Image (cartoon, rainbow, N blue to C red; front, side, top):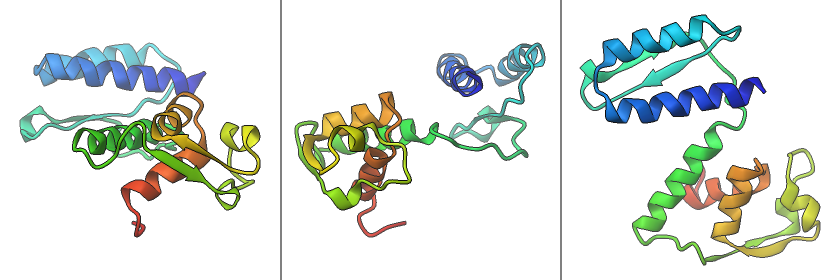
Length: 146
């Protein structure tokens, strides 16, 4: 429940920032909302103009959990827009890819592996928080590793 709240707050303010460049007013509004909650919230908004950058609890470390999966999916969608990948592109998932120590609905559904379109890999990653699919997306983005 806390993770969903944090993600909702972060996404709301990211969108809010795109439409309103008044950083000081935005920061004051965020702090007003955050102080009424029983949660530690971290928010960072960075713009190409350093004056339009703000951070709340930016010096604290937070566990990423599955929040990063959205950004990985967005990076893949950007590659699709560039013509480097296709939503219909078939992705082979081998049995060796289905690591047992990761949460993975795809592994539970296809314990011997399968071949799926990239659109399904993205769907499993974002909507079901599938770690195996997320690993596949990472390998697509950085085939040689990080």
